[in-house]
Structure formats: structure tokens, C-alpha cells
Length: 263
Image (cartoon, rainbow, N blue to C red):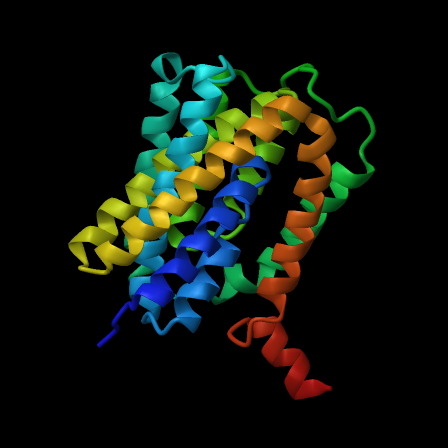
């Protein structure tokens, strides 16, 4: 049975602080917290459920900061968040039934593509541009799909929301970051609700890490609002590439297994 010592809780708190800081700006915090939980000896299913609990604190913290600064308005965007909640819950339900091998194999290539887009595309800054999808269509077509992915698998959700808001919604990077955290909060809550029923939550660990996430996200979101695209863009590129490498070299990744067996 897993036991959390004071020393271990302090390490998890620090990891969550770093994850919350990075996640509030560019996403990818789960690639810090999930491995740390697994290394600490938390069983995989409980690691996923506990990660959703602590992730809620980080997403909520960043959302509060962005809302106070007028970067996002939950009062007008709650229908989109409700669709994200439903998508996250549906994905978490399906995750209990099917293997995520196909997603695990494809994810590194998707993340590399997103990273290269933000690295090489000129004119991607804090300025809004022409939207390719109206807000209602974006809400109905894009948000539940990404929410479903978040509940089903998870890594890179923030990056997917970011590129969708920039390329389809026509938002500048700072505004896209703010709305991404609000929607990420809703998808996390949806998936978390499912994990509660499965008894996959270590509450003490999740709440301690949640405190670290909250403080880290406050710090990161304030830095993002101060510097805008100057910090969001490079950190987003680095985050995507790091996530791609981390997922690709995962021994459970079928692509990694294929390469090891053939070379």
C-alpha cells in the first residue's frame, strides 16, 4: 500500500509547483507530475486520478489570474466549458474500456507539428486575426473533441487547445493561453468526476500537490501576462518538443517498442 512521507510530499509539492508554472504558460505540466507520481510508487490508475485532482488546482489558479486581468470571461464562456466537461468525462469513461496505444504512437508526431508551427510561423503574436470558425462552431466541433482526448489520454491537451484557438479561433497567443486554461479546467473536472467513482484518488497527495500547482500557476500566469508572446511562444515550442520526446521514449509507446525490436 502506498504511503506518503513528509519528505515525499515536499518533493511532490515542488514538482507540482514547477508543473503549474509551466502549464499556466504553455501546457505540458502532466509530463512532470505523472512520472513523479509513478516514480514515487503510486499505482498507474491512482496516478492518473490524483494527477487530475492536482491539475484542477493549477488550471483554476491560472484561470483566476487571467479572469482578474480581463483575459477570459467565464460568465460568457461557460457553455464552451460545459462542452469541455462533457468531453472530458466521456473520454475518461472510454479510457476504462480501450487501449490508448494508437494515441500514444501518434502523439509525438502531433506535438512536433504543433511545436514547428509556433516556431516557424511568422506573425504569431498577441494580436487577434481572422477566425476560421465562428465561436458556436468552435465550441461544438473542437472543444468536446479535445476534451474527450484529455479524458482518454491527456498529454498535450493545452497545446491542442492553443493551436486550435490560434489557427481556427483567430486569437492572439495571450488570449488563447487564457482561454486554454479555462477549458483545461473544465475537461480536468469532467475526467476527475469519473475517476472519483473509480476510487482512483489519493486525496492527501493530490491536495498537497494541488497547493503547489496553485502557487506555481499564479506565478506563471502573471509572468505570461507581463511578457505575452515573448515568453509564451518559445516556452510553447520547447514544451511541445519535450512532450514529444518524453512520450516517444516511453517504453509503453508502440512506436518505441517497434524501433527497439527492429534496430
